[in-house]
Length: 502
Image (cartoon, rainbow, N blue to C red):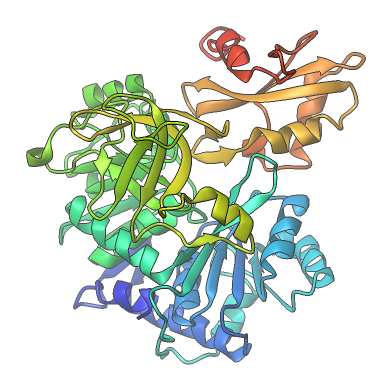
């Protein structure tokens, strides 16, 4: 099998029908097939070893989706990276994953190519969101016919990096079988229909935008209204044409600020990647008449649970993430590994055909994250109700999800602690009406640190979504008897920081 072959089987009979409408730039299903074939032929011409990684550090574009399909067709391994990553961050992925090819935005070619060539990467190409770049120039000379390379369901299709609490990112290895099983399950569970139109406003460097939204539309042969970047006013204007929308909570809060939301054709709004405030869920229902469907997934597992789509399957409950999807097994266990009772809080563990095989080149870490009987430890804390519905109550590893992006405090703290004026720092996530959670740093001073200067310094070193929205200075951090900083007390102390005047 090859995941591309399965996705291609979902294309409509009329290949000249529109597959992607990117603000008036129309791509047919035949364009997707021909364009990805040309890119796959170019990759094949590079004569790369089997299993080679193709790292993509580009802005969102339809051509970026074609590149993903081409990597699948060529039997290579896709490595999506947030285009906001800076040099120090990108260097880790290049060293760890050792990609054979890097595709980056043209504006970054200078520093990306220097970084890549110093670390043994032979091929660096550019791809921009205006249909330009050296990659397209090369591929334009290639044949538009390409037979997908055969792959086993267990063969690696993609690596998604997910940060660790030590600051070292881990590469979750996802197979062709993992991705196809989850896409097929969601197609049925979310009741994808022949006339569905997906409004695609998510980035395509992580699970939500690439493996949930894009796979759903491709497997169902559904047209996509494509936005390279989210613009609330522009999205609101095109809502009347769509039937399905997927977003992180931030997108919903921003859309609620728009004067008009015409949802006459909409049948399904989905939210994930970050906690959705009950207030946002209720405001959306009052404004549009639609109940947002919340679901739960991870880079390592794809989608795990979902509130019901069909009314016959039950009601959608705000603040919960629904029952396990078909084929997914989920259990809640205590610290001693024993099963928790109904409504008892414990560690969330899962298994199923969607669960990854392990972390790239980290066998010891992989072994730690699986139980002896084969269940993956998600690191999340939650409880199951009598109907089997899951409510998440926290994350055992202090993960912050801000605007749908994962932020691990240790990475930010490590940088903050090296800056002038900072003796020690503690980074926490606090409730935020727009981002779901906002990154906040609480620092003890060495001298007289200027929070604004600290923020400016961090912006030069890490992606913007990791930079604290606020930096607070305090004489000392709360600690327990063992000297560990008690972040739970900091979160309680500053819980209303973004609901009060600055």
